[in-house]
Image (cartoon, rainbow over all chains, first blue to last red):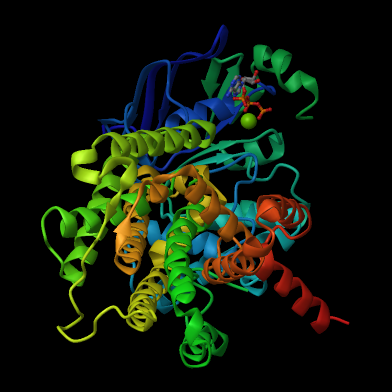
Length: 251
Length: 323
Ligand SMILES: Nc1ncnc2c1ncn2[C@@H]1O[C@H](COP(=O)(O)OP(=O)(O)OP(=O)(O)O)[C@@H](O)[C@H]1O
Ligand SMILES: [Mg+2]
């Protein structure tokens, strides 16, 4: 058996007295389509932030492809192939849409230390950025300032940036939340088309999306894993219904 | 309008960008009595440009940038007065390197912090270096500074003259070279990456950019350029004193940059020109009102023209285009 794409062992996070992650043991298999669900404030975003290194874990271990990355800086994890999108849109608002994607590709390609050649002369980076934007249906908006895009399209830019990093593991924090159905349909189509060897973890409140997309589901409640299983197992789990689905997410 | 490295824009040099150099040449021929002021302004443009690189492009906030000007200036002074090294280019390179080295070492410590802590550390470092400059009088001349700095004639021919012609041309050439380098840098992937850090640091981390290392690089470059400005100041005035290490100079350069327009290469040109010409015209006539006037001006800029003078020009041009 090959090592999991991403794994945590007894991962804990405390903000002062508040425990946001308690002994999370989690495995994301290579090529997985895995959903992480749980009520608001369950600690899902915090979990992702620890995986990417945006937040240090209080204790526990994080393994990426069998390598211990618990102490590794965020940028180094990204370079290893750990990509993410942000729940709260985090873009370069004053830059053109295309540059938002290109900055990530430039890091991936390792050209960011070049101080002499004009950035505009990197046709391959521009073309690749453009290709990712077209995948997201953003071709016509490529040269607009991000802040001039409607919210739904900004969410698509988030995904385009992540695609540009060509990650091995992709962590999607509520990619379709608050997005009009046209764009959320686009997001789902793109996710369905991603190469099968990318392992994907999606945090999502919309149960339709979760059950359409995921082959495994982990339920997080108050920082602890309540249960994990196939969509059918989760849908039939009374505890899950009580704490989460019962709140009216899925009908 | 793209003012830094962009993968979607272009990096061609526009016609307007010739203006500063045309102006510099015009001043040389038309206003010969202002050449020493002109040289001083160009030195401050260089200094402001170095600040723009870290503050305007990379978003590193500092109140102690004078430390790099001072280290460059004292390097040249000490070389000449204490070691009798009077070659102008040797002084220039040495001042650039010592200042850059100091930027690298101090940056390695302070760039791990951010915001107010960073601000306080820049102040602290400048205060400490000032005090060293004051106390290490056997090397720095203490409060008296180092008068009598010598600079050999350039290429054995062009001596610093009474009218400041050589100094002016020398400063113009150095400024031109550095401007060219900085402009390349700003439009490069490195410049684009810096803009990314300024706009959204957490996102740059997530894109795989080792932000600290990148900030340290640009801080070192900026320190080197500020050091060059310091060397020029020593060479042109043929002396160096503690004034180059003061908070006042650090504040002045910040005001000049804000006045011209932060985060744009020509903000670093316009700011010092306006500030220093106004100072020359007004401070002599109304010395008691100068600081007061600068204060009012800053308030006006901060409230009504956040982009400085060039930002204001942009707005006016935009408005004229869209009736
Ligand atoms: N930096 C922080 N400092 C202190 N508390 C925090 C911090 N970040 C998050 N929290 C708290 O941790 C808990 C979990 O937050 P988190 O954002 O991870 O939840 P979530 O499951 O992503 O919720 P949502 O579904 O609303 O996005 C919340 O109670 C939140 O207030
Ligand atoms: Mg969340």
